[in-house]
Image (cartoon, rainbow, N blue to C red; front, side, top):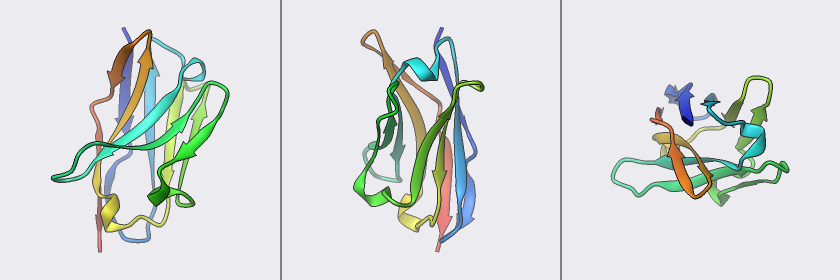
Length: 115
């Protein structure tokens, strides 16, 4: 059973930083393409960042230069370091992977950025 558990969200002021974690079980983060998505209030869920098994990394344009995705294979965890946070980054952040055509989502972690 694949499970993804996010943590690290919270309430911060604009300009501050947070690090989100996505702990995986039932699969290895090093073997899979791992993504972060987010869903802001009243908005559709949107893709944020990706890291593949070959360590290809990419970000949506609005977070490039501020967010960093990484993984720790020994902890089987994927991270999203978020710096210079803006109020528009306020959202529930989700970890996502797809294995053998099956989608797996975490429960999400709330990030709120006040101005």
